[in-house]
Image 1: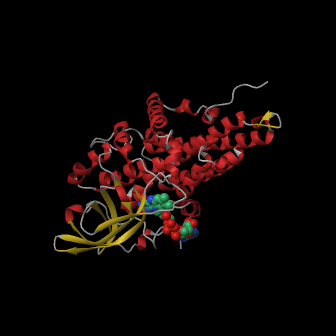
Image 2: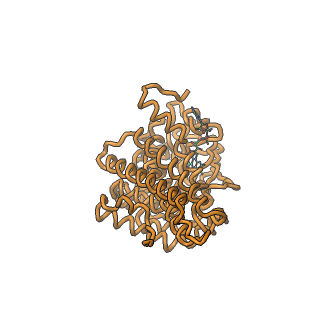
Image 3: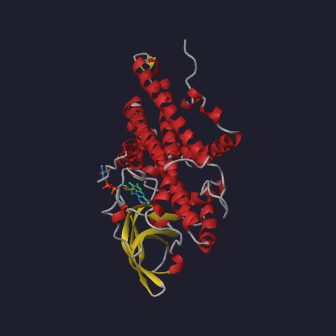
Amino acid sequence: MNSKPMKDPLELLDIASVLTDEEREIQATVAKFLADRVRPHIGEWFENAHFARELAPELGKLGVLGMHLEGYGCAGTNAVSYGLACLELEAADSGFRSFVSVQGSLSMFSIWKWGSEEQKQEWLPRLAAGEAIGCFGLTETDFGSNPSGMRTRAVRDGDDWILNGSKMWITNGGIADVATVWAQTEDGIRGFLVPRGTPGFTTQDIKQKMSLRASITSELYFDNVRLPDAARLPLAEGLRGPLSCLNEARFGILFGAVGAARDCIQTAIEYADSRVQFDKPISAFQLTQKKLADMSVSLGNAALLALHLGRLKDQHRIRPEQISVGKLNNVREAIAIARECRTVLGANGISLEYSPLRHANNLESVLTYEGTSEMHTLVVGQTITGYPAFR
Ligand code: FAD
């Protein structure tokens, strides 16, 4: 005698019961948009390495671009709502969550937090509406985990700055209307807003990716780019500037990873219910149930961790190392879940018709960007022991 399989593994712990009505509503609205506009096409977009740029204004209308920021056309929701939107976006595809994270938490947040009033007025309303696209250039070919060594340099020339160098692995780079670029100056690291079309600023998209294929990743080149001082983010001094933005984006990731994992488990539960071998649905075998049960337990833990950190953030008392705990745990668990779900689907698991391997491949990038899992381990290790072990 069997009852119906569970549709959403997060129901196991009734995670929704600890959300407010408004949070549930925002989550449901984002999920509905993705079900209509993204899910039917995402396999094809991933295969063709296509980013559906035309969805940017629709995401703007939905209110998810810079949604946790106040003013300038941003929705100004709480952090948990922003996290839940990321969860749903990444359940569809990490590429879409990456687009929204980079736009809202890296590009917009850098301007919102460190920019002048003129810069905010010029860019934030258009970025919030999805009429303009932003990117964030910190990583360089030779400086990833250790951005303090960056070679991109801005030098004073009268009232202007001359920017030279390059950035690597930049999400949205090739389509961005404005790039937030971090560069060495004689006063340390500073941020600059470089609009698309500025003479000497060019981009090249990175091809042959096996991960985040429905997202654009590019190199940025700066060849004697002349910028007025008004292009400098006046309040950002040192690495604190970019690191504050990364913390915002990592917060979205630790929710997003829960979404990717949930989607994989949902797919596996459904598949295991319908796939018959040895005259039984494979979900009736103990080994399959152990996989599904273990993964659902770990998903529930990840979701509760994300919510706990979201509540801390809404109380303005979250610490960077706590975000490291969340990113480290939730991405690590999500990638393990995605791979295990792939096994439940057998050969079908390698087809783009099903989501687990696409999620697993996407999560390879998520494990690496915004601080690798090793870097977050070292952050947590330092907090526990008091010893920095980065060098
Ligand atoms: P490395 O720093 O060279 O690390 C290689 C390996 O060595 C890793 O396993 C790392 O953990 C390990 N390692 C390094 N140092 C130590 C140490 N001290 N102790 C132990 N282990 C160590 N960057 C941006 O600025 N903007 C973006 O929009 C952006 N988008 C991205 C999109 C994608 C799809 C990807 C893949 C990357 C993106 N990145 C972006 C870059 C990303 O943030 C970097 O790749 C990341 O910081 C790691 O740098 P790296 O690749 O140079 O690896």
